[in-house]
Image (cartoon, rainbow, N blue to C red):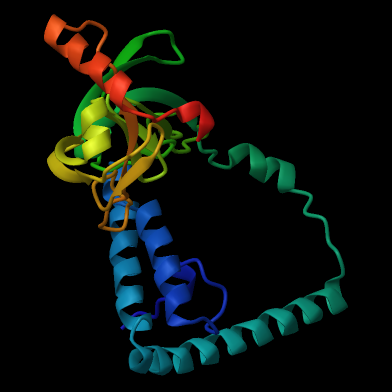
Length: 288
């Protein structure tokens, strides 16, 4: 079986790491090489398989210990050979300048520059995911249409890579890549903060005074919320796991901020009731 450096695949430099550190490194590496964020990149598809294989081995203490014996052995030998080889080379040859360096450089394949652009995506589209067509002007000045698959739960500021859609390479080098940065737009109902969503919860004065149960709109439906007696404007009610996707299979919270709404117009009966309440009540918020 071909040897693979599992620690290097997960972005780790040493085997002296805890299982928790391995989990964190795995999540970061898996996210970086996720197929939905590396469209058309066959290398990313292979890399994600290797990353999953590395995690399966290193996340289990018994298999990690077995692999560590191989890893430590190979890395100790490699370091020794590198140091030894470098010393011998320097001892006999010194620092030699390659006279043909300039000639080699002119023939070297050079990858084209990457290009980055930004597109706006609605909060709901980012939550559910979609395939979006975008038109961009190329270096030559022509318009080109791209089909971009935006994975569900993509984070604000996250980038999607389209392989080979950047500037052309030189001397036969590969084209650069196109990176599309996602800017999530808040909706009328919800504002995004990290993985939490914020919304307004509008209540009547009597609902706030007496307490009640109300239906609160979420990004993917509705949920019932208990309103305690005497709740005040500006207070927040946290509804767990009804927010945005957190990238780890869960969701943030939905935070509903209370806003007590006063009717602008009253019929005669309502006005009389408020007048009666005014006479009966001794409540004065300015002296509380």
